[in-house]
Length: 292
Image 1: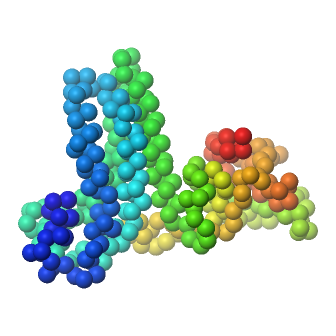
Image 2 (image 1 turned 30 degrees about the vertical axis):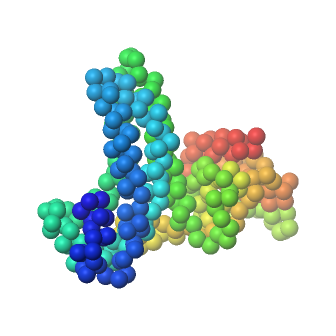
Image 3 (image 1 turned 90 degrees about the vertical axis):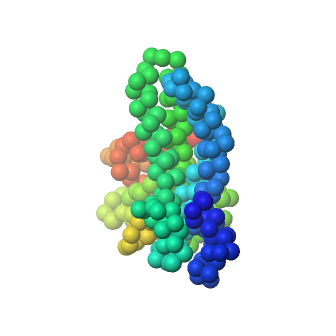
């Protein structure tokens, strides 16, 4: 923040910054400053009060769990930041900053730190739990671990969600994203001539499903070629079902991995095959929760 971000506003360095890079500080650094202040002013101080009682540290995480969502914001911005960095990584400005700091690593290694940090917390909490089985604070550590895993899942889900293309509306209006994953899907529409028994012969479609509180989206996954986030898949939007008109059949004869989602009193039926019975169970439970 001091050696790069602040230097972008330093008049003495202005001549080294190419015009396309000016005013792009927020894209490059995202909300890194917010993350820094949270740790510096709040979280570090709380941790320090438990120096003598490390097993009680779970409490710190639980008290600040809301604030940890700033990491989600950081990760969502990361693809934009990386693409900007790739354009300007060899600019004189960045080289000069790096030289002054005497850093062996370039800026992008540091921009990755928050993403690495949030994944390290769960490893730390798992280790601490291992050595705190029967002591006071173990429950808090377990709950803190569960919450951090929840944030990691939200970060991961949102990274997929920002890769959806071709959806006209505003995804934020569909409520919280609860689950996302890839499935085999067969469809049967009342309007068509297909009978369900003929469906088994047809090849399934590969679809990536996004379950929101208000709708389930069906998308087609496209793998991208390239490095890092460029390699990340994108999802072209195909159609969505409003959860208010959805029904579900939990068991499909002859396959423990299949379930049915139907729409408008079975006017449209989607047979969905999960990769494993466990994945199916999780999805069926989440959909049930939304429907009830």
